Length: 413
Ligand SMILES: Cc1cc2nc3c(=O)[nH]c(=O)nc-3n(C[C@H](O)[C@H](O)[C@H](O)COP(=O)(O)OP(=O)(O)OC[C@H]3O[C@@H](n4cnc5c(N)ncnc54)[C@H](O)[C@@H]3O)c2cc1C
Image 1 (cartoon, helix red, strand yellow):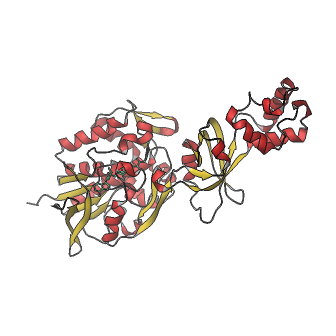
Image 2 (image 1 turned 60 degrees about the horizontal axis):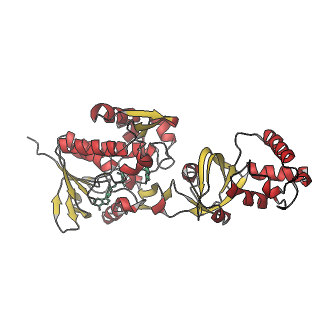
Image 3 (image 1 turned 45 degrees about the horizontal axis):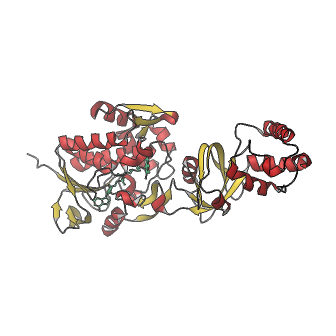
């Protein structure tokens, strides 16, 4: 008779819980070690607490939404596709789901806790031992995994170890880069981590606009040559350092080389009106406000906080009587409204990012099994790997798929 395989999973986030559950269902004896007392601390805050659990699309579309090392994920995503993830949560774990704009899938309850708790219950049912502690080393004997060492000094023996420790973003959730250190100590290469889906530091004008949230604006990201790299529509927030909000986080994933490129975010403050229609609107507003100062004539058009900056950029002296504004001046104003640019200095630090780009280099990992090519019995899952995706549920899809592959193959391998 074959002996039961002992597997230790390091990290009880999305990828680690999926890996542990899968390995247990394959008959392995699984211990999941999580440094926090609660499993899935990050998972519980995903999607603003609603958890965008996956994207209801085919594998090819998932791959189009993974700018970094998508090809590496092809096999794992074929083993557990978005449709499989939906079935898993709905039919297997009993969490009803719904699909929203952009094929984003959420629990019907709008509560990320329902996803995390369903996984936790399933781990209990499958007999996975959950241990609170911080792993400080993966132990090996003659190039093969033999167990892990915890900060407390205790050791756990294992035939296979799955590193699912996440990246370095939102470190308060427990992901502080331990996986990189564990992998490096075993000879793996780690691509320098940096933030993706991250707020952006920008021109100092933004300081004055701090706290201003603009809904229903359009943005365009341009490089130094004026080439458009990305367009989006939605909500943007001015902060004390620059720009944040959903459209900015998404846009940041398309600005991938701050060392060699100068990026600009161009905001269309009136995307519903084309230039001709907006000009007609300005003419009407100017007729209504003909005898007022320019600085007092924009209330109907713009949020109060933005008026001063728009006037400054238009070059029209604020005390100009509206009836004195020339056609050229009106066109200058129109141009600011349609093309309010913010020069981007760089991303916020990786700790503020939604996800970490960089991590364990994928060329040293088997794409079908998530197994290390350097150490027998070692596997990786989730954000610890050098992969990252755009928003829309794709990052969790990566965590589920790589967790599933690592769990299966660690149990079988
Ligand atoms: C605010 C926010 C919102 C997000 N919303 C979404 C969303 O709606 N949809 C989406 O697809 N993605 C979203 N993401 C991204 C998504 O959460 C991550 O990609 C995903 O959680 C990665 O899963 P993981 O298991 O690899 O890592 P993590 O979730 O970070 O889990 C790693 C776990 O390992 C533990 N750990 C680390 N080191 C050790 C150690 N040495 N010993 C023991 N345990 C350790 C940590 O405590 C942690 O619990 C969001 C991220 C953030 C920050």
